[in-house]
Length: 282
Image (cartoon, rainbow, N blue to C red; front, side, top):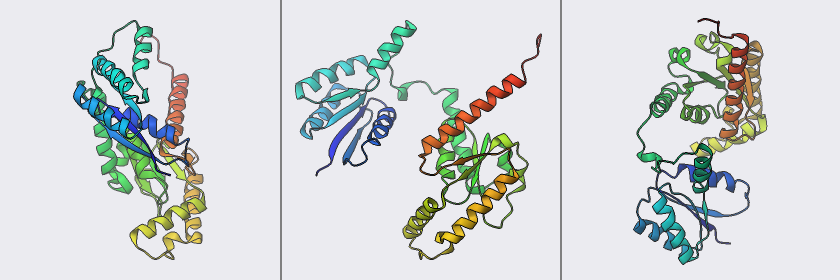
């Protein structure tokens, strides 16, 4: 069966519509779908061309168009070409505008002035790259969070994802028989996140990695007993530091793990606020 086509169309980066679409497609794991991403579609002619292509492919179109004139043109052309579509942001703009009793600026996010938050995220991503896989141990003291775990427990992608949320995140590998860096052990416990995973899932991930690298499958890296010993060593370190939060990433997507961590951090901040109320008169 040929893959069905879904167009994602945006007058900006298309990140919002693409994420929503991909998240929704996870609910249809057995279906073949081909995504075509059309970014920065900012005039009527370009929009008509995309819709004609979508019509020819009998595709569904998921779109985020901020400018009212483009949304209106889209609706007219989609009706003329008999294209099915989903407006991800239009109805939300209307509802939020009504709730706030305000009018949106209707400017694509890519054209909005760069904010301090934007530059903070860029700085956090640069920090994650410089502090990846145990590089620059002196950076650990500057990190908002430090992830630690054995190889292939999603430390790097998780650090990068959290950096995109504005957090400075470093990650440290836990290697069998090697003492973790002193800088890690000296951190306040709430800043360290231990990552663990089911031994069989980790084994499968590592065997796949060995295959990608063209290495023999019987290397220690992919042997069950060695993998199990590595995880047991990591858990010994976690037990020695009960103040560290430990997250099991088995069958968890990066976004799901990040949500668990961010929710835990929120709870910690709320607890701190309760136990350390501001002094009156200050």
